[in-house]
Image (cartoon, rainbow, N blue to C red; front, side, top):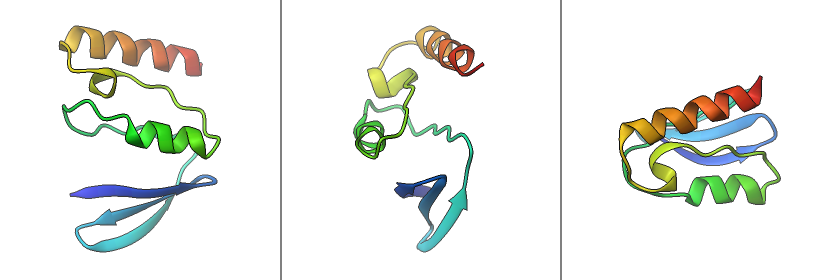
Length: 78
């Protein structure tokens, strides 16, 4: 199981089963469970990162809304 710990300029630091890893990225997409939790999105915004939210981080709803929001976010990135 991998947990994000910190995001810096084009790098995310994660805890992967007790081992810390640093991973570079150009675009970061996270899918994390089914419980509404926007703490990571707020932390990224506080670091000055652009954040597009979709799915259960906005509130528990049906898959229809999650897919629609993901499509809109992906379309925005084009």
